[in-house]
Image (cartoon, rainbow over all chains, first blue to last red; front, top):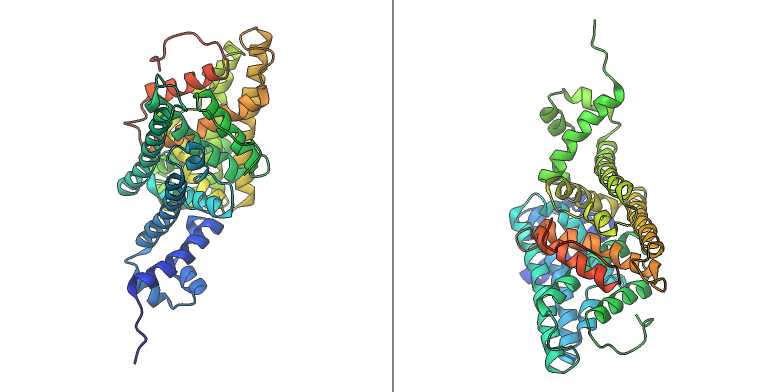
Length: 203
Length: 203
């Protein structure tokens, strides 16, 4: 009797392999053959679970996006005013977060040619900015940010800083160490009037 | 008698076509066949002037990088303290500058897998940060920035803001209008202590 394989579970396994592949070798490494070889499946199995390579790339993007969302959820569940923690959750400060950015950058090239993928990228960015906005409002309510602060505009600045630091750090990890990333973020938060504690050099 | 064709001139013509193609349709659209078709040459001609598609992608990246450098040169030749103008010269505020970013984003995917291309991207980013640093020093000399400002760190913040605003604006041009981009930049400059004139809404 054939082994019963959970459809979603199998898709997740293949997606995790695809994510590693894209993060390590870029978009062009994402082929059914490469994924099958690494996952230890036949190309037929991979083709069975994914409509095409576009479907798999899309899943890979979502894989990284979900992981990032989960990290943010954990930070905000612990402290809904922790805007520094929220942003650190999506900066390339460790291997997993660096891998997320490498996947998103690989995806951007494809998104330039696809309105549907561009929409996905746009929504993800807007969603982060919305979460920053909520977090800043919580800071005002907690008295840690002046009530007259322009929240929406501050969220724009922080929202733009994230992919900016990420681009610098992914391509120049020696110069853009976690310490440097963190310092730029903290100084930006201070400029915006956010009162922050802790030391600058803790990653 | 065959027409004498200038080698560099022909390479430039093909590169301009490749640049349009990548900017419009992403990295995957860059094939010898597509470029030849658009340029009105045979694939043989394109193959004669470029070692391979990697060579052509590289030229395309340089094409956008040179164009950006030229825009910066013009700004700084006019006023070596104009840090706002310098940064505006590389933000996606019009069609040409948006096209540059679309080319760079398309290239990033490839650079993730190639140390040589990643090095190129890294050097370009470092070079912009160096030019910002020089510009900020000129501002200090001119008395338009406090002498105690941490120039290197300010240049890091501005250097990171550039690809960040670009990423937001390329994928979300409606929300990230030129006015919004410009406002974020000006407020960042003000936060860093740079005295700037003019209105916020001039693109």
